[in-house]
Image (cartoon, rainbow, N blue to C red; front, top):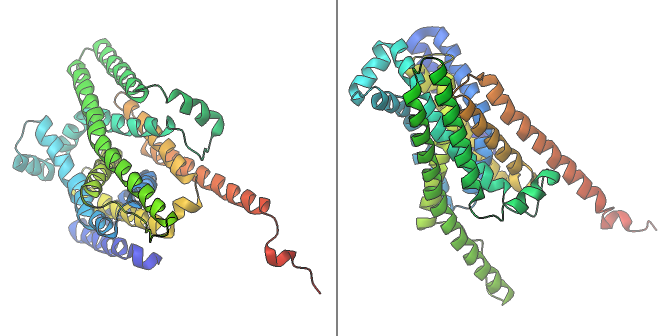
Length: 373
């Protein structure tokens, strides 16, 4: 099962590492390997959240996620996205941006770094909205009940998550503007960029998330009809998202993946400013995240370990905060990766404890209770 699910990830790893050696020797091999590990550690929470969405989609759209989705993730976000950012911020055409990435790597890195506030504001707001909408929803299963119960009550207030997100964005932009003013105003104009980018992230979430939520509700209505048909003696079958519903859910997944990849792309510059090595390393990592997503779906891991989804969303919240903080301050990528790993590990451990407690509460099995003659 593992070999079948991860076979493409293993193949891409071999090809990527070999390409790194051919491109720039064994030093490049090490850089590509480090970048792949960085991407996997930063994106494990992405795989868990993706799995929660992907399991609702039919087999066709799951295959689309693994083929077209991989092309978008690997080539779109890890290779094309940094070039597009440079082209927009430096007001260059795409060809000149590619030339700059290949011939003047230091200047290219500087331009991407200059664009970081806008990238972080967009991604941070998108991820923050995912986290807020999750914690403000009243759920049957609660992980940190002492925190989630009162937050679920607060969630009954309309548009609360949007209000909180906008307050966070205003505080971030104001802090950035104040700091720029105190230090000569070199980045004062970027405070406005942060504000605009953050609002763009919020709008993107509301449009894409709203459409996917609308179709998800239609799916739930269909499931209720199927259950009613089963109770009436008909042949009900599990309903999976297809057509328009699956398309918008796929679109939501891609925007989500893009938001997750921002920190990986920016963090990669701490290791190398070579766009080819960056694309190879992050591309390998993206393949493992995709394969892990499918593995979680097929194994039913989210159903067996019910707190995993909670841990992943708390990791999303932490990543959103980290992205907003990095607009002004530098945070080591190791910290960013460890936060997600710790939260998901904690939620997994809590799930195991819960399963053991439920098994113990059920008592001895029927075979155990049969008296021996």
